[in-house]
Image 1 (cartoon, helix red, strand yellow):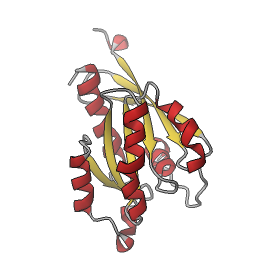
Image 2 (cartoon, one colour; image 1 turned 90 degrees about the vertical axis):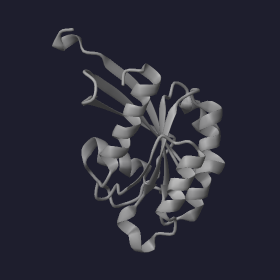
Image 3 (cartoon, helix red, strand yellow; image 1 turned 135 degrees about the vertical axis):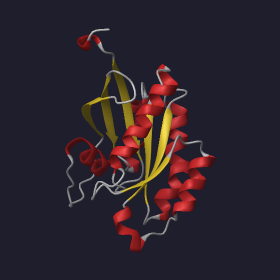
Length: 183
């Protein structure tokens, strides 16, 4: 296969979680290596694209990342955005127990019901830069990840960038191995 004919895998990903857990900040850190200190809630949905080279397989991926609003007023419309999605990052804030509980009780339930069957999803405990305010222990995140059969569990900081690339990379390679069977 010539260099210009390498495969490009299209992947629709969603980030799900309560308002203010850092979904938009994770995307901004991953795509632009940027962090915005002021909170501005997502209205409806923002769609961001990023093309990446794949190290484990010859080829590339075009990521279509859907940043979906977490506010309750978007519950009905949000479910329409799951169609065609092959992966999700389920995000909670390590300083807010309620956001952790809602992963299983709300976000994963919706993703199961309205997302593509056999989609991969990864659990993220965000805001590890606020470790002094941490209320959700790492062990709790690991246990939830096992219970919900997430492909991985990673604690991240959208502020510092810690583990953000790894979270996206791990999900992408899981999708490649499960969805396209190329790994």
